[in-house]
Amino acid sequence: MIRILSASVIFVISSGAALAVDLPSLSNSHNASPHKFFLSSGSNSSSDEYDAWNLDSGYSYSVFESVDLYVGARLNNSQSTADNGLLSGVNYKVSDRISIKSTLRSYQYTEDSETQGAMAAELSSRMRLTENLDLHATFDYEKLQQGVEVGLGFRF
Image (tube, rainbow, N blue to C red; front, side):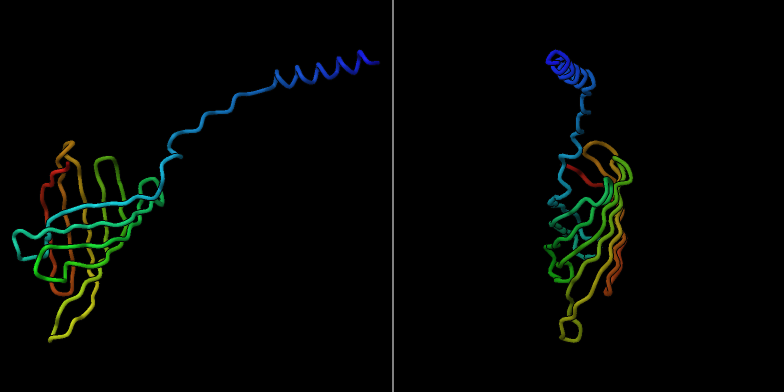
């Protein structure tokens, strides 16, 4: 009886080793964090000043592979405080070369010696022409003025 018991144990061990299967390796895409910080600059299409620029910075969260939600702040070097404020929006990456971004931004302006708060909407698209050159278009709507901008941007 001892032989049968020891033979069955050996059979179980050897059959367990025969049925072992290697697990598939995990892809590296799961290691990427959906949390990102961003910093971007651009010209101000709604300003009358020639040398006006925007600096946007904040936090973005990747909801899907090609969709990011973001919140942040915009700073501007113009004399008007209407171009500074908090912003939030959605960035959609259509392909490796094309992206579309929509933004809602809060700002303040002075009307009849009173400071008022308002919202502005911006819709922009960007297409990468080369590694360092982009074509971009922006439509900006504010209570005070609207602006459309088309131009080339250098990426570094």
